[in-house]
Amino acid sequence: MKRKSDTVKFKLPVVSGNPRKVFVLLLFLLAQLVFITSDSFRLKNVEITGMEHLKGEDVVASCSLPWGKFLWQIDSKSLHDRLAAISWIKSFKIKKKFPGTLKIELSERNPVVAISAADKLHQWFGVDIDGRVLLPLTAKEAESYPKLIVDDKIVVDSLTDKEKIRSIMSFSDLLPLNVRKNVLFYAIDIGGYLSFRYNVGKKDFEIRFGSIEELLRNPQDTSINDKTAILAEMMKQMKDKLSLVEYIDLRYSEPVVKFIVPPSPKKDKDTEENLQAAVPDGV
Image 1 (cartoon, rainbow, N blue to C red):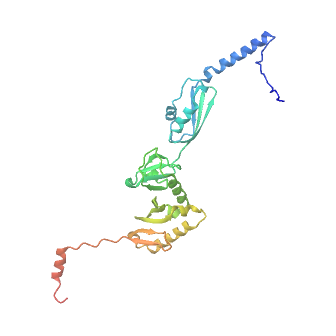
Image 2: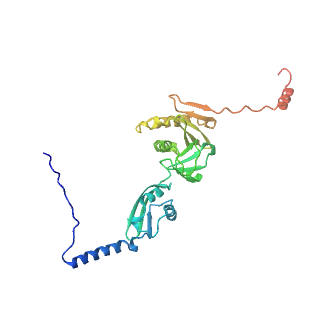
């Protein structure tokens, strides 16, 4: 036999009996309505924290805030999207505070590497760990960061290869300080091989170091220290010839050194003929 389903009915509670209680309840509800629609809940102030590079007025202008509207009328998604579109902002939190205040807690992006296009060498830009190009840097400012040469066109607010940025950061940290301080800039070619321009006194030359992926695969690996030790020994042995070095290739078990071939001195034809004429016969 089919069981009849139970039906549950709800009724709106009715305040009955004492009219005074009804009046007090209505008065309370009216007070609540007046309170939440008072000017204390209208947007009048904005507090922004966590700014170092950004300016508060620029952030507020970008948000297009609905001044004078009630806090609960603010479109949170629209505000979120506008803040996310500001390239310097990495993360943020939005809080609505009484009376009439919007609090925005920012976490800014920070440059970690300086990059320059290969065809515009020494025009440096600060890039964050996610590969976002943040701002142009002076030559002096660029010295505070590991410097990387790239083949891409560099535009502020654009993205560059974040894997290269992170690799250069990691490699630079692992490189011994006595070597790192003499590195002018790094480069990673299309095959993933790392090289850097190395300065010794008034001379600089290229060091071809190896696969960046293999170098960073195991942080406990001693290959970076081993190669820098070999480099130091080679430069000690070649100290009188360093001005003629074009590059040192450390990618092989037997390092390769290429020297610059100095141009042959030009011979002055007239001088040569005069010298020949001045030499006595039989000498």
